[in-house]
Image 1 (tube, rainbow, N blue to C red):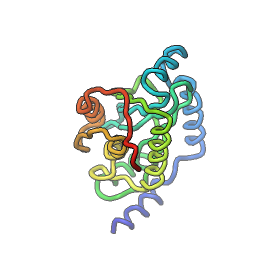
Image 2: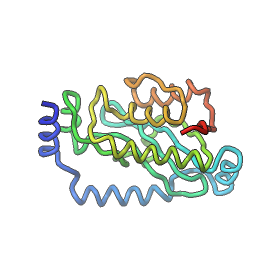
Image 3: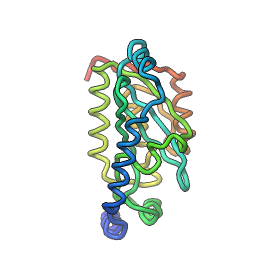
Image 4: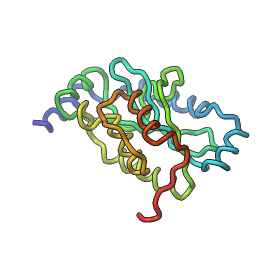
Length: 200
């Protein structure tokens, strides 16, 4: 029955139109130039004192509940990668996702790159070796998250998996995204540097 719900959602909701996809790619390209408000000198200082790579846990406004996602990348570069878990398509899939599993997307969604929608963020820094492991885990999580559900496989559980992999303490997943990110920061004492254990 759940599989039927996924198939129905996929056929009725569909994937975003090519025009929407083009607009999304344009917004990502535009945002890459504005990924951080830090000046080049500040980025170099952050790399020297905190670590040359980062994961930024973020929350933004949305039509209903809000959305949680991560930015990640290298402090010396303006480009940013975005990962999050959202239902494919528009309102229909989102509503259906409160009843069953629906197809998901795991990249940037509308608003993830716009600073005016941001409601909370918590940035932590990593060494190059740790960043390679964390970034590989994020890619693996994206590849293995084919469905979205409001109660189980949602945006906060997605970023919580990343935080747990990094050794951070994580809050309960049913908090609103803004509250989730703020609580994540609070539970970890606002620490800015993360070091993974040497063991795989």
